[in-house]
Image (cartoon, rainbow, N blue to C red; front, side, top):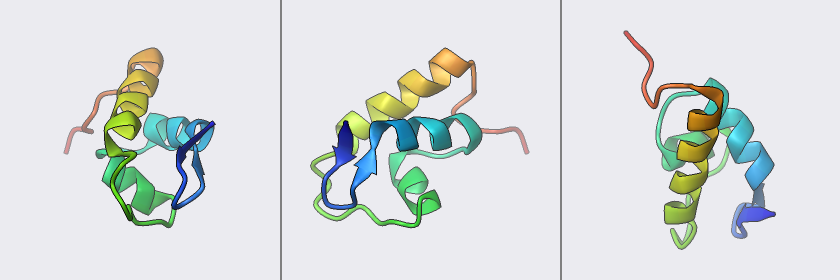
Length: 64
């Protein structure tokens, strides 16, 4: 399923990057080489990120 139509970001791709990279959905879009455009997807993307991290037991931020 696509999370972001503007950038063709799939849920599976967002989940994968959420498990290995810190940051919010906007940060993770950038890790995927894209920028949020219309922002209609951001709330759903944040939920996907939170869910992926909870399932993988990954913190939202990494220690410094």
